[in-house]
Amino acid sequence: MMEELPRIINHFTDDDLYKFTMCCAVIDNFPRTQVKYKFTDRDNTVYPPGFADELRKQIKYLETLRITEEETEFMRRKCSFIPEWFCSYLKGFRYDSRWVKVEQDEEGHLTVEFEGNWSHTILLEVKVLAIISELYYIMTGESASLDYEDCYRRSWDKAERLIRGGCMFSDFGTRRRASFKSQETVVRAMSKCNKSVKGPGRFTGTSNVYLAMKYDLMPIGTMAHEFVCAIAGMYGPQMSNHLAMDAWSRTYRGALGTFLYDTYGWRIFSLNFSEDYANMFKGLRVDSGDNYEQLDNIVGKYRSLNIDPATKQVVFSNGLNVDEALKIRRYASGKCLPSFGIGTHFTNDFPGITPRNIVVKLLAVKITESWPFYCDTCKLSEDHGKYTGNKATVERFLEALHLKG
Image (cartoon, rainbow, N blue to C red; front, side):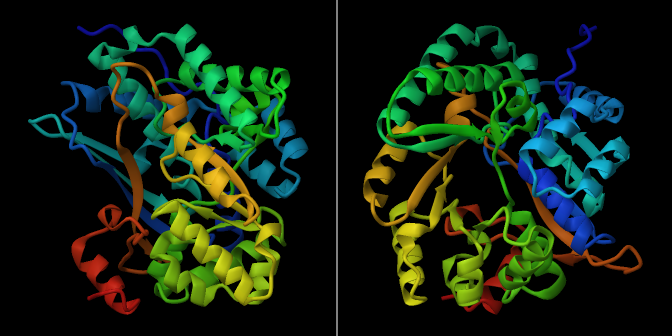
């Protein structure tokens, strides 16, 4: 019999800020919307025997999590854009393992599906991905080889290079981290490096709210593709970016103004990105496609609206490492205010360890629980191999957006 495995998620805010900010906007704008998500392992990994049983136990543990006064006070202090009612909502929030179904086939492949009210299930994605990633290394025995002293040294070196190279950068690595300890090691090293090393760059914070609190950093994050995907499922993809920007602005009134534009590619977003929104939002996030081509598109759009792109922030987060961030920084100099969100390269960079290539994507949505059917949705980023959703829905959305052929 396998010994009892340690509990992986021990803090309510051991999660990315954007899940909380989206949850708040969902309650504000779509309080009765129902959704379905599905886990995808892009490497078709064979998981160890009994993995599904252990994953169910870890998800069950989430039911005992409660946000603490320290955590809510930190969010009030650092995230002034979050309304007080949402802090009260989080105090009463309880996870329910019935929202998640976990299966493992005879070959060892994993199936994980989520279904329920959007404002409830939205807080599961990052935690479940972090659990799957860490649990995999525990159950394969690879966690025993993780050298945290080396991780600290190399994280310091990465931060020093970025700071001296003029990069404004943050940790985005919760979902595919090797372990909670690996992410904490990264954040601790980079936070200390930021105080010791002089240079034009800066470690600006972490997406992980708990670690931001522990190390008195700024929690970083705004939104994810699912916000636009859900709206597209309900109302169609052609105007989904417009409707998403409108909903976001109603909740945050100009705060949290970095918009993730690539859910259905640059072309349709550009058609939706009118002068009022371009002025309201402080910038855009590049998460797919060629970073340099995307930046040129962004610069050209701002100029067409008579807005100086050098005053606008562009956040790059597309599978970056230190070398690529430094290269983009040189290219972007004078064109915009570049910053960098780096994930797996920070929190799952150990010799001999292969990071999990795993995601959870929203697949279907219905505007209210009284509807008898769901509407399928999908994501069509600038990386064509990373389209998510069933084939028929992808084809339908491509046709609706005039992207076929």
